[in-house]
Image (cartoon, rainbow, N blue to C red; front, side, top):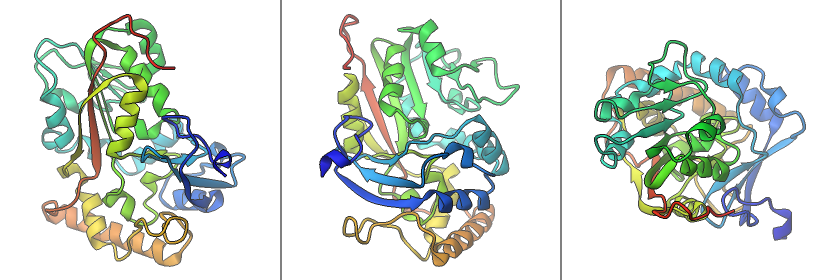
Length: 324
């Protein structure tokens, strides 16, 4: 039966199991209701989107349909996503943790940087960002260029490369990470932060930010280790990241949600997306209550982490080939 399962995006080995599928028609209807518009052009020949689990612990969707520039521009503008991600950036735990590994005088690149909020955690003159979808008028230290284009002109240039909340958006996480490593000097530092599973993010039923074409993969500590092994870097630290203030709405939604999408008996009880009116109503009510709570209350305390961070070191030997 394993030959009927799709390959893991990290190892290429067949998935360990099928978790569940969701009708593409249902998924598109939910995205329309969430303000993303018509996304049918992204799923022209996919009657169903299926979630699988790899033997690495990675959860991944097939087909791996990534959002295009129009999707991100429209959906993020509708929900003021860039403003939310930039808010309270001085207190973002992944930024604070990552900054400990970047020394003064380092040449570093922040891939998928958005507004470049990570810069305030670094010594003056160290920061450089890369984002092809950066908003017009962004700071001069942010390059509006694709990652492959930048690899072609800056291979081996940086002492550190970071990617916060980016890898889950790409269809080929292994190829993406190899490009990050290609930008590093020998012995350089690679830092990747991604959504964690299980977590409040994945326990809210029908929480669309965790579905294609937005999130294509859900990450675990073991998946991060497998990724480090696959690209030939040494994992220095793999750690779950505590909640940050900008994630308050997720934690309030989780707190107010009367339903939970949790792993059960594989293939029987485990489900995260479905056309169930109780799930739709629960999502709408928990979102509205969370919006009110974040406006008047501090973030709820004691919540489990939503993200996992990999800090790794590239090989010291510049002649060493990366794995195929």
